[in-house]
Image 1: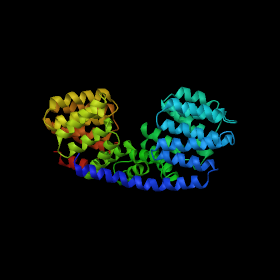
Image 2 (image 1 turned 60 degrees about the vertical axis):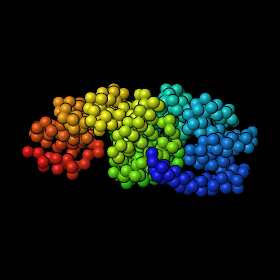
Image 3 (image 1 turned 90 degrees about the vertical axis):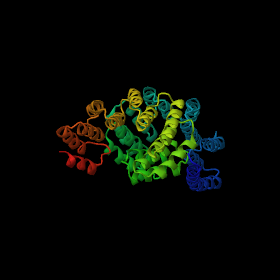
Image 4 (image 1 turned 120 degrees about the vertical axis):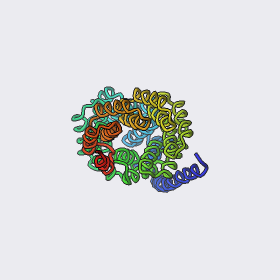
Length: 422
């Protein structure tokens, strides 16, 4: 990364941090002005956690818990529950369960203690354990959100939706059930329904970085996605996944400078994260720097040897450098690691077409359209392979199917390809 690119990244990180500090300063002032109000302490603890400042969140919530311990059990329950959530955010399951037990030990805290324990179980996707805890949690907003999440992990679609809808009834202003239902639907192929729920989550809580990230993640590449992701990084400047996705969207839109800045921000947050190295490498490859891309792909694999995106970057880089045999070896390795990603097959198809390996191109594209029949780019790739191999009729059929399929397809470009067929 150049000095200029790094400077831009630092500036971009500093600006959102300043805005976030202003909001936190207000929350701190409220907590200071209301030392006997547990809700002020809880609000500040949540705000700090939302901003990614977990250590400060823990310190504030512990202060509040100590203040109200033995005097206001209802407040102590809420404060220890929030402490558990901050430890969950830190991926500290053991300490989270300790806080849940403390919450449960308060007078009247048994039900919320079970709901809290269920949330902790969900950190490690222990859906069965979570459901067991929730049997004693009662019908509360938090319990129903946790129940929906657990049922979604078990792929019990209708039951998960029912639990989330029940949570929405309990608290119509709550964003969490919309967030989790939307994420679940989008990840299981119901993208339009998922995006609608995620938009509702953002309407209800416009500064929730998780809702903003999920919305930006599932929207098609465009300014709406950029706007959601940029706001997610403003609300949580250390949100690495949001910076990575922002860089990916910027790259897809041809905004190379912005993509480089976002990628540099991700790498600055955690240089030991494979996805950060991959996106920096993607930016380098798109910028005509395959040697830099190769270095970043290898760095990512050094962090996580089983990273399919890193293998795909390695494959694309070898293809760019003209070494199709090494590229194909890495495409196969990438697909072996992630058979749910049709982009690997699409990239392999295009690399084979460029290298004149038309039989292989047809094979990869045929596999892509067979295994991902509703994915538009797969049909475009098959059309390209067939057109390159002189099969105009087959190419026309594939391109036509691409126009009615899902996924990022440039309809104007596809129609132009159809018009160019003989």
